[in-house]
Length: 174
Image (tube, rainbow, N blue to C red; front, top):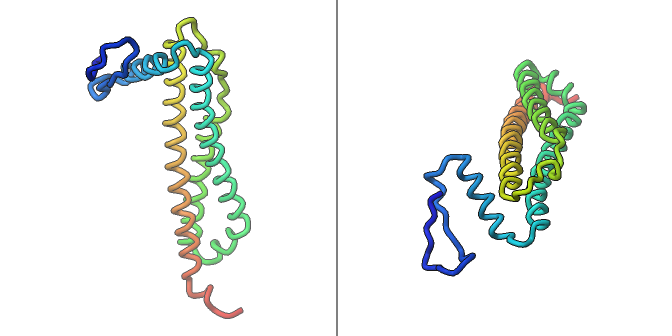
């Protein structure tokens, strides 16, 4: 680890760690060690803090699942209109729904893989923190990828709605 102390020579003094030159594993270990120092003597609070980070990711994934559900529900009401508007809006809608469903599956994979923080507990809390941070980073990557699919799907879906709205036959009186 590359650490630079800024004039603090007392034990437990604040440290700045230059993480740019560290590998991913070294950065994770450095983060775990910093958290351990921050929560020195407060083992339960450290574990709660790490569990809270995982909870935040699960909540984010649940929000995306809700957005996916809303998109599928709206398609049930407006899908037929977009299909009648022509092949462009139908193709955009199908592409959008497909991307949203891919995002949904990725979110569900993140939500349904249950591993309790207590299963990661080790005698050394730095090692525990490393394991939980690795899991957090993996899940964060998965949810981030899912969010990209959901956002792309919504863009296609909104393009389908726009295409359907601008088709000349939709503006004729009924």
